[in-house]
Amino acid sequence: MVRFAVSAVLVAIALGAVNEALAAGSCRPTRDGKDRMEMSGGCPSGYVVRGACCESVRPISQPSGANACPAGTMLRLGACVPRQ
View 1 (cartoon, rainbow, N blue to C red):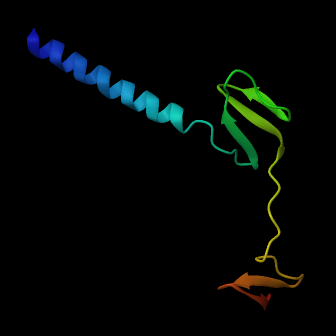
View 2 (tube, rainbow, N blue to C red; view 1 turned 30 degrees about the vertical axis):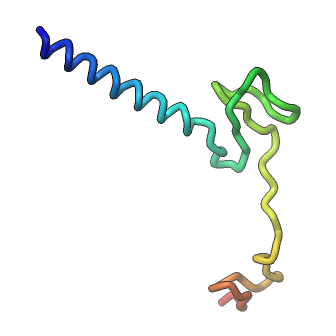
């Protein structure tokens, strides 16, 4: 009986840790580029409720910084080279 109680406690602790780990990473950006954040009270402007998260209405714009190459070229090893 004691072994069963100890086993039950260990299983409960393990399941609790797994649930916390899954909940902590559940608000990641979506595959279509929309930002997600944990909801605390309500969602900010431009976000809607999706499950336990706030999801942006529009996709995150990708920065066009120094890694952008002119048309007809592509970035390879940090330099813009012609497409082949």
